[in-house]
Amino acid sequence: MAITQRELKKEKDMVANLLRANGQDYNHWLHLHHQKYIEENQDLVMKALQAYKATATEVKEMKEVKEDSKANESSQLSNV
Image 1 (cartoon, rainbow, N blue to C red):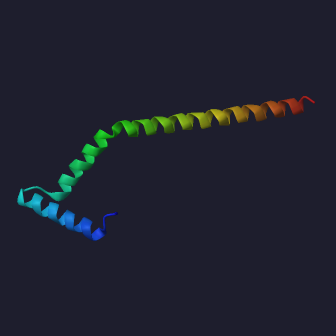
Image 2 (cartoon, rainbow, N blue to C red):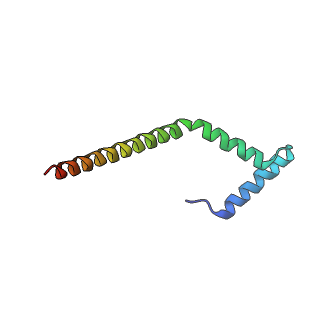
Image 3 (cartoon, one colour):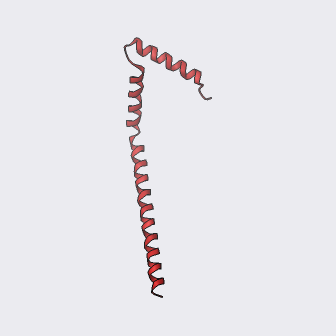
């Protein structure tokens, strides 16, 4: 079952109050958790970037092959 916005707000308020009681800021705490999650999943980010780079390189190579093919066709037609 999906969590409702009301439940999320209630949990957020509870955590914010607990943190405040312990002298901590909710946004800072949340930021630290975001950073931790990013660090734990950095390998996924790197894999995605590598895949993107490989795809971009393949597209560039395909365009170059297409352009070379068109240039060859043009030169062959002009030789006829």
